[in-house]
Length: 421
Image (tube, rainbow, N blue to C red):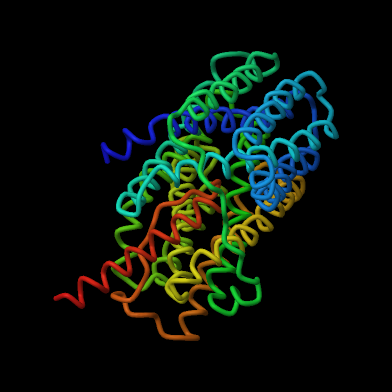
């Protein structure tokens, strides 16, 4: 772990600043939108727009990097991100914010692709798993730290928008000044969606449903808090609870994942997440129960992303694992676009707590579908399953491919060890 950190600290530090900047702007807009008098429908479209841009960036950024290189893509996208963050408070108009969210989602997606390809190039096959773990921890710590910054200034002013703009600008310094060479960039041609669905119906359905869950909690949690009458400090702690839960529960679930039928674990974890949302709907007026529910929802939804990828890998040949990455990211992205829109509609019909109704329905649907799939085919032997690698839903296709490669190499190493024995 120390050797990994010594080789990648500059990249990880830069990504940490980047996640703080991205984490604060998402929550801040939810609070500021309430102050500006935006409707729930307007806020849901604004939040969904980020994922439209993010999905577009995941498709177009690789080609941009191939054409002009990492450094130019970094510089161009960084300037757009900083500009949009300042435009938000300057032009408090829903249409301006929608356009800004599309652009900033596109830019962050491209930045992630660029930075993660650099990170992947900085590690070897033997320590890729450790690098992925460190990367996930840095992402979660960055988002949690961002929520603490919300209480440092008035959300109705400019300061809280200037902070993420500065942090995003600073984030590129350690990355661009790193001695790590610019990597050759290449991504695998993705597997068709029809092929991917045929390989793992549960993996694909799960990624779609989970995209809606993650996008709702990432985009609409602060909107819920503002509508529910929470203070800025309470909203920041509420949003942070999702990511604290994800960090704490990720590794125990990963350990279990490699030792049991993953469908049983998907069923149980998604049912637990659904129960957490039901708890918030029934008892969320008590702030302690609200925080507990957020912890449970975050602690189940984020690890489920890695779990579904590992489960899908169980039915793929080694050479197809990386090819499946693009399809998985696309399916998750489509669900992410729909999540805030449906959440906003439910919150408009049912009130603020409609936010938890969506999460409960999606998680319980995933649990039910996992139970159904268990009746359709036998589970692969635990000894023959791929390794679990921790990944966050914000990761780009580059990190997903790296995780697929790690799973493939780990499985091959296990086979060689067994053969030698």
